[in-house]
Image (cartoon, rainbow, N blue to C red; front, side):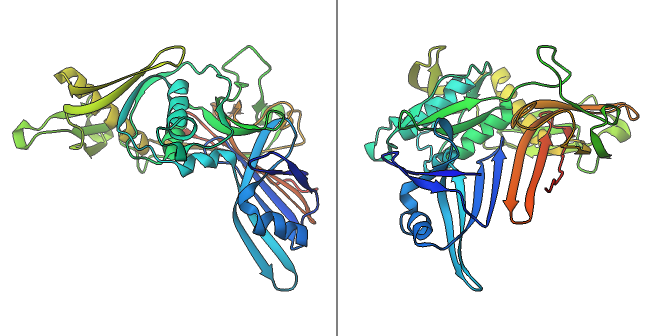
Length: 385
Protein backbone atom coordinates (compact mmCIF):
# COMPACT_ATOMS: atom_id res chain seq x y z
CA UNK A 1 0.00 0.00 0.00
CA UNK A 2 1.10 3.56 -0.73
CA UNK A 3 -0.29 6.52 1.19
CA UNK A 4 -0.42 10.19 0.21
CA UNK A 5 -0.03 12.71 3.05
CA UNK A 6 -2.22 15.84 2.79
CA UNK A 7 -2.63 19.01 4.84
CA UNK A 8 -6.08 18.98 6.42
CA UNK A 9 -7.00 22.57 5.57
CA UNK A 10 -5.23 23.30 2.28
CA UNK A 11 -5.21 19.79 0.73
CA UNK A 12 -1.56 20.36 -0.15
CA UNK A 13 0.15 17.03 -0.76
CA UNK A 14 3.03 16.93 1.71
CA UNK A 15 4.58 13.65 0.63
CA UNK A 16 4.17 9.92 0.06
CA UNK A 17 4.52 7.15 2.63
CA UNK A 18 5.53 3.90 0.95
CA UNK A 19 7.95 2.48 3.53
CA UNK A 20 6.68 1.03 6.79
CA UNK A 21 7.25 -1.94 9.05
CA UNK A 22 3.61 -3.00 9.15
CA UNK A 23 0.21 -1.77 8.05
CA UNK A 24 -3.26 -3.05 8.84
CA UNK A 25 -6.31 -1.59 7.12
CA UNK A 26 -9.82 -2.38 8.34
CA UNK A 27 -12.69 -1.35 6.06
CA UNK A 28 -16.00 -1.47 7.93
CA UNK A 29 -19.58 -1.25 6.67
CA UNK A 30 -21.00 -0.95 10.19
CA UNK A 31 -18.52 1.42 11.86
CA UNK A 32 -15.62 3.78 11.19
CA UNK A 33 -12.85 2.22 9.11
CA UNK A 34 -9.32 2.29 10.54
CA UNK A 35 -5.66 1.96 9.61
CA UNK A 36 -2.78 1.05 11.90
CA UNK A 37 0.75 1.88 10.75
CA UNK A 38 4.07 0.98 12.31
CA UNK A 39 6.80 3.17 10.87
CA UNK A 40 10.39 4.02 11.70
CA UNK A 41 10.83 7.14 13.82
CA UNK A 42 12.53 9.12 11.07
CA UNK A 43 12.53 12.94 11.24
CA UNK A 44 9.90 13.02 8.48
CA UNK A 45 7.59 10.52 10.18
CA UNK A 46 7.99 12.32 13.51
CA UNK A 47 6.99 15.56 11.77
CA UNK A 48 3.91 13.98 10.18
CA UNK A 49 2.63 11.70 12.91
CA UNK A 50 3.83 13.39 16.13
CA UNK A 51 4.54 17.10 15.62
CA UNK A 52 1.84 17.95 13.07
CA UNK A 53 -0.53 15.01 13.44
CA UNK A 54 -3.51 17.31 14.06
CA UNK A 55 -3.13 18.89 10.63
CA UNK A 56 -2.71 15.94 8.26
CA UNK A 57 -4.76 13.16 6.76
CA UNK A 58 -3.70 10.27 4.56
CA UNK A 59 -5.32 8.76 1.48
CA UNK A 60 -4.51 5.96 -0.95
CA UNK A 61 -5.42 7.83 -4.13
CA UNK A 62 -5.76 11.26 -5.69
CA UNK A 63 -9.44 11.25 -6.65
CA UNK A 64 -12.45 11.04 -4.34
CA UNK A 65 -11.19 8.46 -1.86
CA UNK A 66 -11.38 7.34 1.75
CA UNK A 67 -9.20 9.47 3.96
CA UNK A 68 -7.83 8.78 7.44
CA UNK A 69 -6.79 11.09 10.27
CA UNK A 70 -4.35 10.44 13.13
CA UNK A 71 -6.07 9.71 16.44
CA UNK A 72 -3.36 7.83 18.36
CA UNK A 73 0.42 8.05 17.94
CA UNK A 74 2.83 6.12 20.16
CA UNK A 75 6.59 6.66 20.03
CA UNK A 76 8.63 3.66 21.18
CA UNK A 77 12.40 3.55 21.63
CA UNK A 78 13.40 0.04 22.64
CA UNK A 79 15.41 -2.22 20.34
CA UNK A 80 14.70 0.40 17.68
CA UNK A 81 12.75 3.64 17.55
CA UNK A 82 9.35 3.42 15.88
CA UNK A 83 5.93 5.07 15.82
CA UNK A 84 2.67 3.16 16.06
CA UNK A 85 -0.05 5.25 14.41
CA UNK A 86 -3.78 4.58 14.63
CA UNK A 87 -5.80 6.46 12.02
CA UNK A 88 -9.60 6.62 11.84
CA UNK A 89 -11.60 7.25 8.68
CA UNK A 90 -12.77 10.81 8.10
CA UNK A 91 -16.26 9.63 9.03
CA UNK A 92 -14.97 9.88 12.62
CA UNK A 93 -15.38 13.65 12.35
CA UNK A 94 -19.05 13.00 13.11
CA UNK A 95 -18.00 11.74 16.56
CA UNK A 96 -16.84 15.28 17.39
CA UNK A 97 -20.41 16.67 17.38
CA UNK A 98 -23.41 16.04 19.60
CA UNK A 99 -27.04 16.48 18.61
CA UNK A 100 -27.97 19.38 20.88
CA UNK A 101 -31.57 20.00 19.89
CA UNK A 102 -34.55 17.85 20.82
CA UNK A 103 -35.96 17.19 17.36
CA UNK A 104 -38.04 14.55 15.61
CA UNK A 105 -37.17 14.09 11.93
CA UNK A 106 -39.74 12.62 9.56
CA UNK A 107 -39.05 11.61 5.95
CA UNK A 108 -36.47 9.83 3.82
CA UNK A 109 -33.72 8.26 5.96
CA UNK A 110 -30.88 9.42 3.68
CA UNK A 111 -32.13 13.00 3.74
CA UNK A 112 -32.58 12.83 7.51
CA UNK A 113 -28.95 11.75 7.95
CA UNK A 114 -27.83 14.56 5.66
CA UNK A 115 -29.90 17.04 7.69
CA UNK A 116 -28.30 15.92 10.95
CA UNK A 117 -24.84 16.46 9.43
CA UNK A 118 -25.79 19.77 7.83
CA UNK A 119 -27.29 21.20 11.03
CA UNK A 120 -24.43 20.11 13.28
CA UNK A 121 -21.32 20.27 11.07
CA UNK A 122 -21.87 22.26 7.86
CA UNK A 123 -24.38 25.03 8.59
CA UNK A 124 -24.86 25.03 12.39
CA UNK A 125 -26.41 27.94 14.26
CA UNK A 126 -23.14 28.34 16.18
CA UNK A 127 -20.50 29.09 13.56
CA UNK A 128 -17.77 27.61 15.77
CA UNK A 129 -19.31 24.16 15.20
CA UNK A 130 -18.80 24.41 11.43
CA UNK A 131 -16.16 22.16 9.82
CA UNK A 132 -14.50 23.92 6.90
CA UNK A 133 -14.43 22.26 3.49
CA UNK A 134 -17.16 19.76 4.48
CA UNK A 135 -20.08 19.51 2.04
CA UNK A 136 -23.04 17.24 1.40
CA UNK A 137 -22.09 14.97 -1.50
CA UNK A 138 -24.38 13.50 -4.18
CA UNK A 139 -27.59 11.75 -3.12
CA UNK A 140 -27.34 7.96 -3.45
CA UNK A 141 -31.08 7.32 -3.65
CA UNK A 142 -31.93 5.28 -0.53
CA UNK A 143 -35.72 4.84 -0.56
CA UNK A 144 -36.57 4.06 3.08
CA UNK A 145 -38.64 6.54 5.09
CA UNK A 146 -38.65 6.83 8.86
CA UNK A 147 -39.27 8.93 11.95
CA UNK A 148 -36.09 9.51 13.97
CA UNK A 149 -35.35 11.31 17.21
CA UNK A 150 -31.86 11.41 18.74
CA UNK A 151 -31.80 13.98 21.50
CA UNK A 152 -28.47 15.06 23.02
CA UNK A 153 -26.77 12.09 21.36
CA UNK A 154 -23.30 11.79 19.87
CA UNK A 155 -23.83 12.35 16.14
CA UNK A 156 -21.94 9.33 14.83
CA UNK A 157 -23.79 6.99 17.21
CA UNK A 158 -27.11 8.26 15.85
CA UNK A 159 -25.95 7.95 12.23
CA UNK A 160 -24.65 4.39 12.65
CA UNK A 161 -27.85 3.46 14.45
CA UNK A 162 -29.87 4.53 11.41
CA UNK A 163 -27.42 2.75 9.10
CA UNK A 164 -27.77 -0.55 10.94
CA UNK A 165 -31.54 -0.24 10.98
CA UNK A 166 -31.76 0.22 7.21
CA UNK A 167 -28.69 -1.80 6.15
CA UNK A 168 -26.85 1.22 4.73
CA UNK A 169 -23.56 3.00 5.46
CA UNK A 170 -22.06 6.48 5.38
CA UNK A 171 -18.65 7.91 4.66
CA UNK A 172 -16.85 11.23 4.54
CA UNK A 173 -14.71 11.03 1.43
CA UNK A 174 -11.68 13.18 0.70
CA UNK A 175 -12.47 14.82 -2.64
CA UNK A 176 -8.87 15.66 -3.50
CA UNK A 177 -9.40 17.40 -6.89
CA UNK A 178 -12.02 19.74 -5.40
CA UNK A 179 -10.20 20.21 -2.07
CA UNK A 180 -13.18 19.33 0.08
CA UNK A 181 -14.68 16.57 2.23
CA UNK A 182 -17.89 14.95 1.02
CA UNK A 183 -20.48 13.36 3.34
CA UNK A 184 -22.30 10.56 1.55
CA UNK A 185 -24.77 7.80 2.43
CA UNK A 186 -24.46 4.60 0.39
CA UNK A 187 -25.35 0.93 0.13
CA UNK A 188 -23.45 -2.06 -1.24
CA UNK A 189 -24.48 -3.98 -4.36
CA UNK A 190 -26.69 -7.07 -4.19
CA UNK A 191 -24.76 -9.99 -5.72
CA UNK A 192 -26.76 -12.74 -3.98
CA UNK A 193 -28.97 -15.33 -5.65
CA UNK A 194 -32.03 -13.35 -4.53
CA UNK A 195 -31.54 -11.02 -7.51
CA UNK A 196 -31.13 -11.64 -11.24
CA UNK A 197 -29.76 -8.30 -12.43
CA UNK A 198 -26.07 -9.20 -12.11
CA UNK A 199 -23.95 -12.34 -11.77
CA UNK A 200 -24.36 -13.91 -8.35
CA UNK A 201 -21.42 -14.57 -6.04
CA UNK A 202 -21.91 -17.95 -4.32
CA UNK A 203 -19.64 -19.73 -1.88
CA UNK A 204 -20.45 -23.42 -1.36
CA UNK A 205 -18.93 -26.89 -1.44
CA UNK A 206 -20.71 -27.49 -4.73
CA UNK A 207 -18.84 -24.53 -6.26
CA UNK A 208 -15.55 -25.90 -4.92
CA UNK A 209 -14.64 -22.54 -3.35
CA UNK A 210 -15.17 -23.43 0.31
CA UNK A 211 -12.48 -24.86 2.58
CA UNK A 212 -14.71 -25.57 5.62
CA UNK A 213 -18.24 -24.91 6.86
CA UNK A 214 -19.85 -25.00 10.32
CA UNK A 215 -23.48 -24.40 11.27
CA UNK A 216 -24.74 -23.60 14.80
CA UNK A 217 -28.33 -23.04 15.97
CA UNK A 218 -28.37 -21.34 19.41
CA UNK A 219 -31.71 -20.66 21.15
CA UNK A 220 -30.22 -19.76 24.56
CA UNK A 221 -31.25 -16.06 24.52
CA UNK A 222 -34.21 -16.43 22.18
CA UNK A 223 -37.44 -14.69 23.25
CA UNK A 224 -40.53 -14.77 21.03
CA UNK A 225 -43.01 -12.86 23.22
CA UNK A 226 -42.32 -9.26 24.25
CA UNK A 227 -44.48 -7.71 27.00
CA UNK A 228 -44.11 -3.92 26.83
CA UNK A 229 -45.16 -1.76 29.80
CA UNK A 230 -45.73 1.94 29.10
CA UNK A 231 -47.03 4.92 31.08
CA UNK A 232 -49.38 4.73 34.03
CA UNK A 233 -49.43 3.06 37.44
CA UNK A 234 -50.79 -0.24 38.74
CA UNK A 235 -53.99 -1.30 36.96
CA UNK A 236 -53.96 1.91 34.86
CA UNK A 237 -50.60 1.09 33.31
CA UNK A 238 -50.65 0.46 29.55
CA UNK A 239 -49.36 -2.87 28.26
CA UNK A 240 -48.75 -4.25 24.78
CA UNK A 241 -47.88 -7.86 23.99
CA UNK A 242 -45.98 -8.72 20.81
CA UNK A 243 -46.04 -12.34 19.66
CA UNK A 244 -48.78 -13.26 22.11
CA UNK A 245 -49.98 -16.15 19.95
CA UNK A 246 -46.95 -18.19 20.99
CA UNK A 247 -47.95 -20.63 23.73
CA UNK A 248 -46.98 -23.55 25.89
CA UNK A 249 -43.39 -24.73 26.18
CA UNK A 250 -42.38 -22.84 23.03
CA UNK A 251 -43.42 -19.47 24.49
CA UNK A 252 -40.39 -17.43 25.68
CA UNK A 253 -41.22 -14.09 27.33
CA UNK A 254 -39.30 -10.81 27.61
CA UNK A 255 -40.52 -7.90 29.77
CA UNK A 256 -39.65 -4.38 28.59
CA UNK A 257 -40.17 -1.32 30.81
CA UNK A 258 -40.83 1.76 28.63
CA UNK A 259 -42.05 4.20 31.25
CA UNK A 260 -39.95 6.88 29.50
CA UNK A 261 -42.38 6.84 26.57
CA UNK A 262 -45.26 9.22 27.24
CA UNK A 263 -48.35 9.83 25.14
CA UNK A 264 -48.16 13.63 25.71
CA UNK A 265 -44.91 15.48 24.97
CA UNK A 266 -43.62 18.76 23.52
CA UNK A 267 -41.53 18.15 20.42
CA UNK A 268 -39.85 19.97 17.57
CA UNK A 269 -40.87 18.14 14.41
CA UNK A 270 -38.90 18.55 11.18
CA UNK A 271 -40.52 17.18 8.05
CA UNK A 272 -38.26 16.63 5.04
CA UNK A 273 -39.72 16.58 1.52
CA UNK A 274 -38.34 14.72 -1.50
CA UNK A 275 -35.98 17.60 -2.34
CA UNK A 276 -34.54 17.67 1.17
CA UNK A 277 -36.29 20.90 2.19
CA UNK A 278 -37.07 21.15 5.91
CA UNK A 279 -40.22 22.43 7.60
CA UNK A 280 -39.85 22.84 11.37
CA UNK A 281 -42.63 23.19 13.91
CA UNK A 282 -42.79 22.91 17.70
CA UNK A 283 -45.94 21.17 18.86
CA UNK A 284 -47.57 19.59 21.86
CA UNK A 285 -47.92 15.95 20.91
CA UNK A 286 -50.95 14.16 22.29
CA UNK A 287 -51.04 10.71 20.78
CA UNK A 288 -54.19 8.74 20.26
CA UNK A 289 -54.42 5.37 22.00
CA UNK A 290 -53.57 3.68 18.69
CA UNK A 291 -50.53 5.91 18.07
CA UNK A 292 -49.18 5.36 21.57
CA UNK A 293 -49.68 1.62 21.23
CA UNK A 294 -47.70 1.70 17.99
CA UNK A 295 -44.90 3.57 19.78
CA UNK A 296 -44.77 0.84 22.41
CA UNK A 297 -44.75 -1.82 19.70
CA UNK A 298 -41.78 -0.14 17.97
CA UNK A 299 -39.81 -0.09 21.23
CA UNK A 300 -40.76 -3.70 21.89
CA UNK A 301 -39.60 -4.75 18.44
CA UNK A 302 -36.26 -2.96 18.96
CA UNK A 303 -35.66 -4.76 22.27
CA UNK A 304 -36.93 -8.06 20.90
CA UNK A 305 -34.38 -7.87 18.09
CA UNK A 306 -31.66 -8.19 20.76
CA UNK A 307 -33.03 -11.57 21.85
CA UNK A 308 -33.27 -13.43 18.59
CA UNK A 309 -32.46 -17.02 17.84
CA UNK A 310 -28.90 -17.12 16.55
CA UNK A 311 -28.21 -19.26 13.51
CA UNK A 312 -24.51 -19.00 12.76
CA UNK A 313 -23.19 -20.21 9.42
CA UNK A 314 -19.40 -20.02 9.43
CA UNK A 315 -17.54 -20.56 6.20
CA UNK A 316 -13.87 -20.50 5.33
CA UNK A 317 -13.67 -19.49 1.70
CA UNK A 318 -10.93 -20.06 -0.84
CA UNK A 319 -9.67 -16.63 -1.85
CA UNK A 320 -8.01 -18.15 -4.90
CA UNK A 321 -11.38 -19.26 -6.26
CA UNK A 322 -13.33 -17.92 -9.22
CA UNK A 323 -14.63 -14.95 -7.17
CA UNK A 324 -12.02 -12.26 -6.43
CA UNK A 325 -12.36 -9.62 -3.71
CA UNK A 326 -12.14 -6.18 -5.28
CA UNK A 327 -13.19 -7.49 -8.68
CA UNK A 328 -16.29 -9.65 -8.29
CA UNK A 329 -17.44 -8.33 -4.90
CA UNK A 330 -16.51 -5.52 -2.48
CA UNK A 331 -17.15 -4.16 0.99
CA UNK A 332 -20.88 -3.73 1.54
CA UNK A 333 -21.97 -6.19 -1.18
CA UNK A 334 -24.51 -8.97 -0.65
CA UNK A 335 -23.40 -12.52 -1.52
CA UNK A 336 -24.79 -16.04 -0.95
CA UNK A 337 -23.35 -18.74 1.32
CA UNK A 338 -24.86 -22.17 0.70
CA UNK A 339 -24.73 -25.75 1.98
CA UNK A 340 -26.90 -28.08 -0.07
CA UNK A 341 -26.41 -31.00 2.33
CA UNK A 342 -28.04 -29.01 5.16
CA UNK A 343 -30.40 -27.17 2.87
CA UNK A 344 -29.13 -23.88 4.28
CA UNK A 345 -28.57 -20.72 2.27
CA UNK A 346 -27.64 -17.36 3.76
CA UNK A 347 -27.76 -14.13 1.78
CA UNK A 348 -25.35 -11.93 3.67
CA UNK A 349 -23.48 -8.66 3.38
CA UNK A 350 -19.71 -8.16 3.46
CA UNK A 351 -19.34 -5.94 6.52
CA UNK A 352 -15.61 -5.93 7.22
CA UNK A 353 -12.34 -6.42 5.33
CA UNK A 354 -9.01 -6.45 7.18
CA UNK A 355 -5.75 -6.40 5.22
CA UNK A 356 -2.43 -6.76 7.00
CA UNK A 357 0.99 -6.43 5.39
CA UNK A 358 4.47 -6.77 6.92
CA UNK A 359 7.81 -8.47 6.28
CA UNK A 360 6.18 -11.90 6.73
CA UNK A 361 3.70 -11.34 3.91
CA UNK A 362 0.06 -10.46 3.39
CA UNK A 363 -3.03 -11.52 5.35
CA UNK A 364 -6.66 -11.01 4.42
CA UNK A 365 -9.63 -11.43 6.75
CA UNK A 366 -13.28 -11.04 5.76
CA UNK A 367 -16.42 -10.89 7.91
CA UNK A 368 -19.85 -11.39 6.42
CA UNK A 369 -22.85 -10.47 8.55
CA UNK A 370 -26.46 -10.99 7.55
CA UNK A 371 -28.92 -8.11 7.49
CA UNK A 372 -31.48 -10.59 8.84
CA UNK A 373 -31.12 -10.55 12.66
CA UNK A 374 -31.68 -14.31 13.05
CA UNK A 375 -28.96 -15.20 10.58
CA UNK A 376 -25.42 -14.19 11.50
CA UNK A 377 -22.66 -15.39 9.23
CA UNK A 378 -19.00 -14.75 9.82
CA UNK A 379 -16.29 -15.63 7.36
CA UNK A 380 -12.67 -15.29 8.30
CA UNK A 381 -9.76 -16.62 6.37
CA UNK A 382 -6.11 -15.55 6.49
CA UNK A 383 -4.09 -15.70 3.31
CA UNK A 384 -0.30 -15.37 3.40
CA UNK A 385 2.03 -14.92 0.47
